[in-house]
Every structure is written in structure tokens, then in C-alpha cells.
Length: 369
Image (cartoon, rainbow, N blue to C red):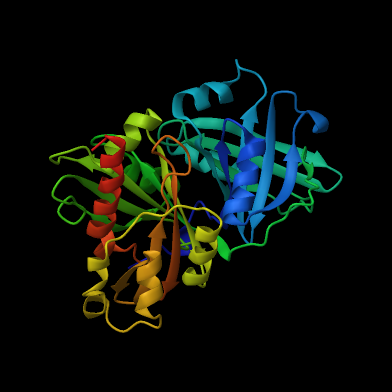
């Protein structure tokens, strides 16, 4: 798996800075992510800080930062976004050494501007932000914060709250997966290649990602240093409606399908999440009957993996363990993946059939298969 030489990277990316979700009720959503997923309250912006249009709660767990934003007025563009899509990811913000250069480089290569470069300042220093449009109504923000020592961004204050549940061991964003429309995958692969300098490091066709009833195709895009990975899915022809088609129908367009978050101890993390009420896809016991003959020796005992429904796959560099939540809102759209990598750099191709059959069981219960 060859990654682009970082010295040739015209768009150096330092990691995922934050992910912003537009939600119907940020106060309640923040409580959910704290209680269920173990995030800590970090920062707040709203009328009390001078913002009369929206409220944002910022949560953090290790290197993961979520921003939950709700409009205060019904005629807001944020309200229109929520009306159309439901709760979902609006912005994937990427840390960069130079937000103006990131904007200029990507726009010069054909990106549609979303946020012109501008600098925010307060007593803690200054931050420069810019942004470009992505698939659907999703955007990439570029965040330059080398001259800032504040809690999050200018305009935010510390979120003081006595309720700070213990974290569950979620460490950093491993990857974010986008669902795009029919025959649009290669369009967005080209976007990442031409505009952001990414490379296509893995490709899965509908023969690899299929069940008796549905199929999809996927390509994984990675930046030069490998810190940022964006798999892109599109539907493929099948007997029945695929999970991507269901997403596109209920999200009413293209968008982020799931956020994969890394942990060092998936058994501990998933046990904690289940105890806190997070619901995961159910994997049949038959999956585990030949698991070890397929993936070889692993460090973990099979019994807790089977009890929790954790999937295992191996590539030439090691193995990984992964599990997927059910959608975290009423529309069958955004969900989360919990992943532990033990050398593997792939994405669990050997688990696709079991995963898709689990997704199809959920679709059938919803009447959407």
C-alpha cells in the first residue's frame, strides 16, 4: 500500500481537527454523546457569547472533537439543512499549517469555495479558517491554529458543567465514510485526487461488497502522510435496496455515512458503550464458527468477541477488530464504527458480507429493504 510522499504534498494535513454535526437540539444531543459515548464537555457558543443565530456545544474525548450546532431561528440555513437531512455531519474540519494556502491550492484546482479565508482573534491568539464544498451539502474546513492557545475557537467559552462521565477509551478518528449517488464515486475519487492530492489506496467492487440482495462499490482515499482517509461508497445494482440507497433516500442526498473511531481495547470500549445504552448491529453466531481458521491466531479470546458481536479481519500487515452501531438518530443515516487496529491498515473486507447481512436485517425491520 503506497502512500504519497509527504514532501510532494501541496496540501499538508495534520489530522482531523473537529467534526461538526448540525442537530435539532444541541443541548440534548450533547447530553447523549456525553452519557452514551463518554465525551467530555469542552466549550460552548451561543447567545451568552454573542452568537444570536446558533448554539454550539463542543465535546472532546482524547483527540476526537465533536461540535454539535443548532439554529436559533427557523429561517436559518442550518434549520433548512436539518429539515432536509435530519441530524448529520455538516463539516469535516482538517488541521493545516496554512489555511489560506490550503484554500488557494484547492480552489485553484477546481474546488468550490465555501468559506473564504478569514482570521478570528481573542485574548488567546488567532485562528485562520477557510473551507470548500464536498459531496452533497458537506464541507471541508481548513483550520490553522498554531497561533492559538484558547479552549477551542475565538467566540467560544469553556463549558462549565458538573456532569462529566468517564471516557470509554475512544482515541481518534480513524476514517470517515461518504455515501454518494449512482455513478458518482469516481467523480469524488477524482475530486480528492486532483483537488486535494489524495491517492486511491483500496478499491472494492460489487462482487466483493454484496449479499444475495444488495451491493455497493467503494474506494478508499488517503492523503500524503496517511493521517486522513475517506472511503467513498456508491450504490450498485442488486435484487433489493442497498444500505447506501436507504441512506440517500432518508438523508435526501449525499453525505457522511459513518465515523470510524479508534480504540486500544475494543472489548472494554464496546462493553462500556453497551452498558451506556449504545446499540450495535447483531452478528449471528455462525460468523464465529470458522473465524479463527479464516483470520489465524489473534490475541483476544473468541468468547467475548462473539458475545459483543465484534468482527475480525486480517491483511498482510496484521489484523483489526471492528463493530458498527445502529444509526444514532431516527432516520437510518449516520452511525459509528469502533475499530482497533493490530497492524492491519485495511478496512475489513472479509467482514463485508456479515456486516451487510446485519444491515439488511435492520433494513427489513424498517420496511426499507
